[in-house]
Image (cartoon, rainbow, N blue to C red):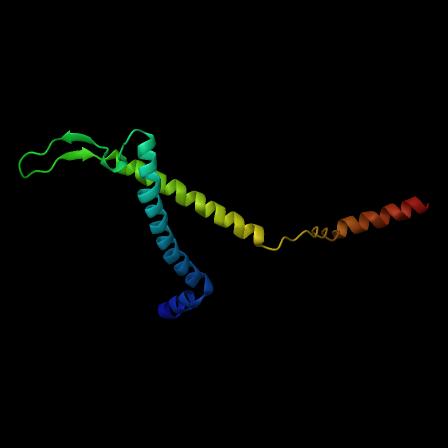
Length: 131
């Protein structure tokens, strides 16, 4: 029973579409990360006075002998925030474009049929107006 249900779920188009979306999203994320890391951040670093964001850190405890330093690497966090912002913006633009390509239904919705009470009241009104 469980395997049958799983097979039906896996064969449905939605599960396959989701898998394709995740794979393409992962590849898209790598492309955007490369654009940010290799193109945008160096330019931003030059504009801000030669700062390399990946090297920005706050050292909590310096290295001692074989013990490595303990540091808060906030430069990597800044890099990740820029990556996320660009990816989110690109996905927003893609979804906006896809939604604009969808066929728009401009026909107004049909009004609901009158209820029995409304029909009866209408008949009573017509009878009274004839008298």
